[in-house]
Length: 160
Picture 1 (cartoon, one colour):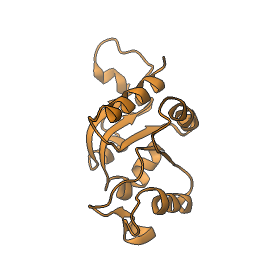
Picture 2 (cartoon, rainbow, N blue to C red):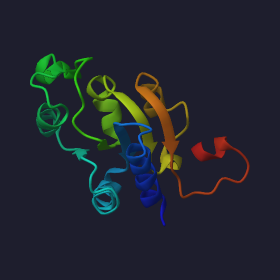
Picture 3 (cartoon, rainbow, N blue to C red):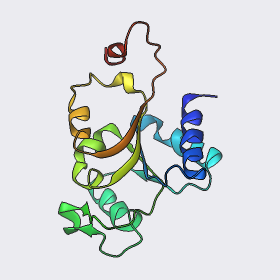
Picture 4 (cartoon, one colour):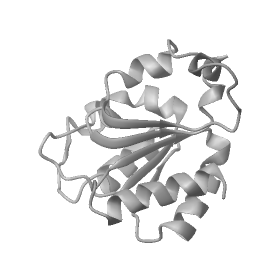
């Protein structure tokens, strides 16, 4: 099985066995998000997966309708869009791109994530990149970096 399927089954087993309720944040290249959607449908059909892509207005609609069961869970309206601390997250998995992790850090960074999955992690410049600096402000319990590029010497090779 490929790394995408193994990761989905891993996250689903964590959820089903009661280790965590999520939510899980999956960050992937935009070109692979449709594949992630398809694999989640096949391997974890009971997961509620929200694909968080599109322009600013599309993402505002997704935040308003898909982030929480509660009305007015997004504090500050369309501009500030932070989740209220006590708001219950509606989805199990949020699937998005590297760029939106950075652009929408106010909204995404206000959620406590059980696990972050970074697909194609070797494509990111280095562990000092803006993406990783932004992630330092996120509340993430666990991080899982995926790559199909083999490492021969050390973890630093992942970023070169």
